[in-house]
Amino acid sequence: MTSSAAASAEIPPPDPAIPAWDIDPYDEAVLRDPVPYYDELRARGPLTWLTRYGMFAAGRHPEVQEIFSDWERFVSSRGVGISDFKLEKPWRPPSIVLEVDPPAHTRTRAVITRALSPRAVSRLKEGFAAEADALIDRLLAKGEFDAVADLAEAYPLKVFPDAVGISPDGREMLLTYGAMVFNALGPDNALRRAAMAQAPEVTAWIAGRCRRDAITKDGFAASIYGAADSGDLSEEECGLLVRSLLSAGVDTTVNGLGAAIWCLANNPDQLAALRADPKLARPCFEEVLRMTSPVHSFCRTANQDTEVSGIAIPEGSKILCVLAAANLDPEHWPNADRFDIARRPVGHVAFGTGIHGCVGQSVARQEAEAVLSAIARKVDSIELTGPAEWRPNNAVRGLASLPVRFAAA
Amino acid sequence: MVKVIYTADDGSRTEVEAKAGDSLMQTAIVNGVDGIVGECGGSAMCATCHVYVDPAWLDRLPPRSEVEEEMLESTASERRDNSRLSCQIVAAPDLDGIVVVMPPDQI
Image (cartoon, rainbow over all chains, first blue to last red; front, side, top):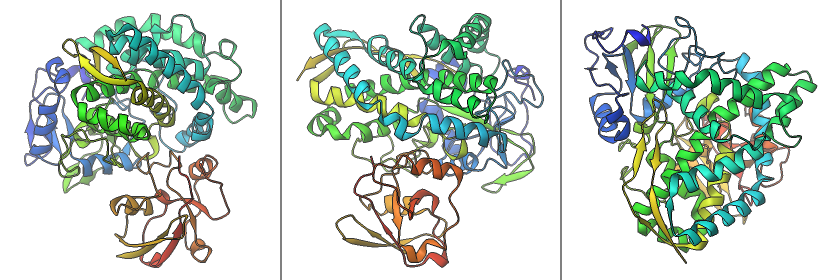
């Protein structure tokens, strides 16, 4: 099927025994308030057929885990959105690490893994912490502010492009680009069309920032370009990998940090627990990720006739893997809807899992640890001073604004 | 079931039964064994499930993948010849009784 064929005609499931559902998971109202959809998706069965789009959806933890862990049966090279690259031309040259399978994936992944390794990231720890401390001090002085614009966006927009090594001007464009890349994974709806309208300008800007002559000598981008010097990758491939960092590294972290403030503001007892033991900053962030899943869904494509949980899946089927639903699966997580920073939610799939598991997760954790430990040491209470507004997106979930007041400890 | 013995840095031993097919990282988490963090959930992306495998068992393990090799360069405690990521060791009958030593630091 094609993504543009959706919406009007109902597409029946390949087997009438498969539960069919006519919900539109990309409806803006669902994207704003998705938890009831997640709950019903899991309740309907291990796999559900979405009649509007002619694809499967998985919302329980075991199936999402199985599909993401098996790149041979469930490929990424046919796109991780709703569009099948075998049938439709991608809107941009595909990512050479996200939208590709082994053995091609193995080469590029090795380079980017090395550039973003925990060891490389640990060198940034002090700088990240100093930046976070200064930001929280400024926000305490301000008192009342928007936790999205002034904190969740401001912090990664400062530290992440610095770490990558791109120039400081026009960085807000990274937010536009991130939202565009993730909206592009959905169907041809208003969100995707609005994103695509900006594509020519934004992609040209991004490509300019990824060029070797535009980067600093000491960041992640420079380490990636080292692979061109050693002959492991071409210079063009290195540029595309830097583009991957900028696509995937900003919006996701912004959403994760915004969600962290939202979770702590709504759960004062958990903020108190964090304050009592600032070392809980890292486990706290894991629990935020489990509760809110900044990337809510990614697709895989069955590259052969196969089956999952006894349900036959024909070759060419798209499967929407709803990571956010799996992270709230009560069969997997006791008291799944409770935000508990003492939980060890190992096995959450907010960063995906398997060979395509988020390659930047060490960077995200380092940023979050810096911000949350600064809050743990400096902030006594977080008061919501207005309603939280969510920003609908076809693949990521994040806040548009979160008015708050921080009181100093 | 497969018996796994986790030895902490202070020498204390925890013996647990692993389900065949589960990784030694998952087994430690499920059984509340302190000393293994496993932040990334088993994608070999965080190097926080580092263990030193008792040399008597090393030969029975499959070789390290390229990604595991890379991650072992990032461990918080020193890498040794018998360093492995426990998320990459899958419990199987021929590993019944395996002993792994947990390093002092994972993060």
